Image (cartoon, rainbow, N blue to C red; front, side, top):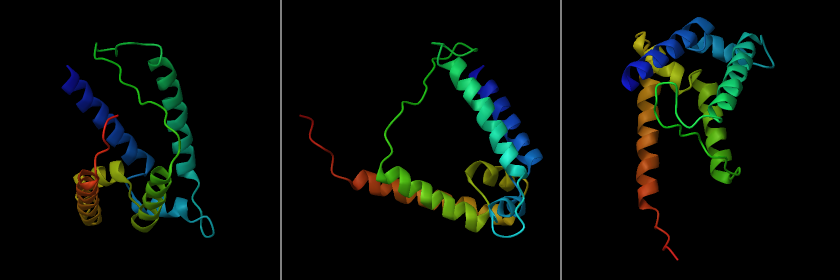
Length: 143
């Protein structure tokens, strides 16, 4: 049941990205072009997503199990640190250059977009490099 609901949620999410235009790099770059021909339509998409997410998290926070009986594992709040800010800046730069972020890039890849293939490949390389660097960090002694 969990696999089916996960697949269904992913399909609905992907369809929403297509309908909203988030899988179209030209639309995203038009939204990010604040000094030029700004297209504010994605701001409404984001505001709607934030509103739905806020309601969903508020309801989920009151539950111990999901609607299908799985354990609820909500993210814990953590303070803003340099790694978060640096990652956010890199995300924003990549989004501005390519017009893709990870979810829409996977949708566009499924639609056969060549630019998405390049983006997803670069994203996977970046994720792999991050993992390698994280594993090389010295582990702190428990004390």
